[in-house]
Length: 419
Image (tube, rainbow, N blue to C red; front, side, top):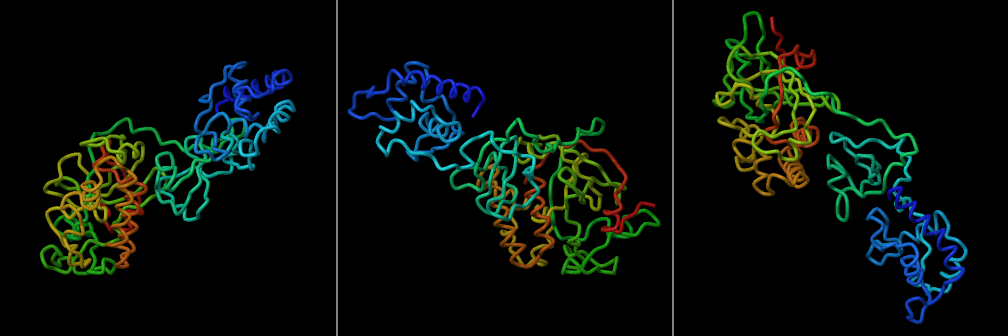
């Protein structure tokens, strides 16, 4: 409840003390002295209207409407009505005057948020009843929460319940802020793919002299294929991209990953990208939510359909594109993997549209369960979870990029180290 409304309420309580000394009767002449008479007196003398309190006031008397009666009941419990009003109220019928149970959720602005965690899109909240803070408000989980924005997903039948607001007079928790946008760099955009093929940089002929090629794996996606000249799975061979090339979170605003870029001497080069909060084709909710987040991407592949400034990020379920080694490796049909370009997210968009963010994330989680988790493909499931949560299931987000030094962690995973 806003401060101005509390002021009006307190003024109302003071006036009640004066008014009811002289007037405390059946104002509406319905044969009963009750709280309605109190309201009519308040309207007459103070100008208070039923709509003076917003929806943050709870429906204390359970009459399926939030109105001034609920505000008065809350006031009676928390700030105590003057005796004149209480005496008058005692003459009301029991069904119309109910002393509220002290419920923490009924008084917005009363929370000490200094010890409540800030909601994070990349965090999981497995315990029912977990409290989080988002934009100065406190929410409580109704069941397992995994990436759903509480501001967009609260209410009846949804994962979060709005409890109230942080008390501005108490020390709030530190607010997580996105890093500043990169001021120098070129503009581009990100797409996604995972075709299970042996990447371009895994061929010794495609890396600079003195540089070891990218590691590849056998059909299990985990054990290395030591034959650097083995044919790609997409050509009927035994060489697949390794599962450890999935993207992963470093912190709330930084992730590492691997990508295909345009052709040239790109193997083992790294690029810092920062997302602008815009979509390349449409400002979908995921692209907007990604604003300010950064990635460092190592180039491990080229795409003949990848243009300059485009980063085709390796994301499980991102679409097989022109080649497909995944049906054999995962024992799934082409239809289960979604659209050829865009993969599982594109399939979900075809079903739910482009702008229902919660529905798209839920759709992706269901596909993650049925395709990866059901087959024990743990690393691939982690990569798709990252896409849903940290990456916000963003569809082709715009970005600013520049070449940067490769983190040792990416070098250790890939084995690619520029001479």
